[in-house]
Amino acid sequence: AGFETWASRIGIGLAGAAVAGSATTEYRILAKTDRGFALLRCSRIRQYATELLEQLPPTTPLEKRGGTMLTTEWSVDGRTYSVAKSSEPAMSAMAGSEMP
Image (cartoon, rainbow, N blue to C red; front, side, top):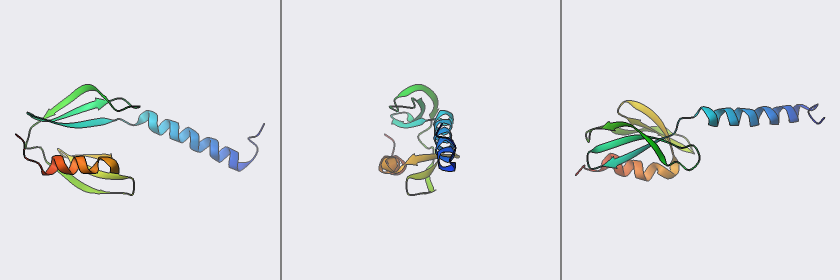
């Protein structure tokens, strides 16, 4: 039925792993507000905020910890988050800016 070859089996396994990986990933948004930072839960598809998880003080440390070709690792209040490279300038701006 088309699943006899190892290539087919490996392809199906990789597709299943990708679906499982995205289903178990928790997405967060870090927003800078006039009261500090807000950590929000966001949707999986369009990444819009769905719930306020935590209000962080303006003195919350944001530190870049490393990364790969696709993501950078950021420590936010002692917790590490993987951030897409496209969002790295925004994170750097928040890390280096003074709060009002």
